[in-house]
Structure formats: C-alpha cells, structure tokens
Image (cartoon, rainbow, N blue to C red; front, side, top):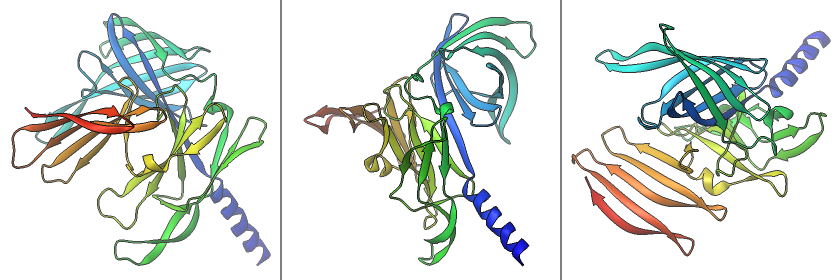
Amino acid sequence: MNKILILFIFSQIAFAQKTIVKTSLHFSGKINKYPIEMTIEFIQGQDSVSGSYYYLKNSKDMPIFTKGTYKAGQIKLEETTYTAAKKGNVPAKTGSFVLQLDNEHKLSGIWQNVKKDKKFDATLTCLEDLSVFNPKNYTYKLNPHKGKAENMNGELADNFLISKLDIFNAKKEKVQTLSGFNKAIYEKDAAVELEDLNFDGLLDIKIPIYFPDRIKYDGGFLYFVYDKTKKQFIRNTKLEELEYLHFDQRNKEFIKYEADGNGNETDSYYKWSNNNFYLIKKVESFEDSDKTTYTEYEIKNNKSVKVKQYQK
C-alpha cells in the first residue's frame, strides 16, 4: 500500500513539473540578393526546430515551411512548399539550409535547391535583442493539475488547469511567479511560448489556454509583456480580450483573424503606441458581396479614429 502511495505521489510531482517551452525568433536577411523574413521556433531541451520564411517580393501570404535540427550552433532546415489541388494541398521539397548561429544571434550559411545544383549564400540578423533577456538562461514551470471547468452544456467537467508560472534563473533561483489566473488547457502538458508581443525587441510570454464551453474559437492566450525597467513580466488583460493573435515582426503590428465559416471574414490590425495598442485597419469580406471593405483608422488622443472606408 505504501509503495502504491509513493508511486502515486511521484507521478503527481512529475506531472506538475512538465512544461513545454517554445521560443519564436525572427530573422531578416537575404538568400543571395533576395530579401527574406524567417521565423524559427526552438523547443527548450530539444534539438528539433521548425518555422517558415517568405520572400519580400512574394509577401508573407506565400510562406515556405521549414523543419530541421539545431545542434552545437548549427541549424539544418529542410523546406517544403504546398500547392493547392483538388485533393488538398500537395507538399513538395524545394530546398534546404545549413546555417550557423553566432553569439550575436546572426545566421550565416548556405541555401541550396532540392537537386543540389544551385547554392546561394544566406545571411540573416535576429530581430530580437537577447542580450537583455535570453530565454535559454531560464527555466519555466507551470502547475498543470486536474480541476473543474464549465463545458458547452453549462456543466462542470474534468479538465486540466493551470494557475501559476514559476520562472527560475540559471542558478535555479526563483525570479518571478506569474499567478492570478485559473485557466483550462488542452492537455496536461502545459506550454509556455516566448515571442516579442509589443515589438520592442524583447521576448514576452504567452500561455495557450482552452475555453471548454465553446464550439468555435475555443483557444486563446494569457499574455505577459516584459518590462525592461522592472525586469519582470506584466500581465496584459486587455490583450487577452482579443484572444488568439498573429504578431507581424516586420510591420510591427498584430492581427486578429475572424471567420464564421460562411464566407464572412474580418481581419483587424493593431499597432502599439505608448504602451497601449490601437486598431489601425479592418478588412472585411462578406458572403453576399464580391468586394472587400477596408476601414482605416488613425491614433488620435489615445483613441482609434476612423478616417477612411472604401471597397475594392
């Protein structure tokens, strides 16, 4: 009996300590003479990496997806493009990278096509400043545990929940605890994602959460922005109201995409100003119209003010 109890306690401790930590770094540079923007996602404790890049002449709507390894400062990536077909998107291997990541977080190396008969130099610079806060010097521990949360029927049901994040430095000293929430997550393996949310060059924290009472839009994030002066992460509940967001490092704006599945879609674009964010553009398409409606805003007196609306 005691042996079973000890095993149970050990399993609960191991479960509570399991946190997946992902870091998204963004790079700007060139393959030969062609400008590109690249994102690479690193997972703490693993050598696998993934991401995408796009040529500026093609825009971010035409990404090339990458997957590979990161070992001893060397990043090897295989790239894949997708072509639309009747049976779905058809993948095709189109090339690969071998890149070195130096101490200043610059990438340099070679891109070659899949036939290996064309090779070009590739050089990129990291957009984030890791000298102030480098996530590899810290460990992050969420406290996933079983609890109750309301489901789609309005009933309390079993879910995995999180209520705090502890951050430790390289000396294993706790430097901050983020708390004040009790949210459901998709699975027991809780995740922490680091990405620059306000485009100040410093990595911030977002924690994926789950809304079990919804059918659509059942996911979002808790957002914590790094304060360089306080050397602390500060929760941004206003950002959380927008839930799931895409952050565009090149244009320094973030976007909320919405679609009802019937052909009605809205893309809302936001920019930061004086530690706050404002709506600057809205792009809407409707099922009963072949035109797209554009609404533009300017930031005036700490408000988003509509200045133009047109269709095309």
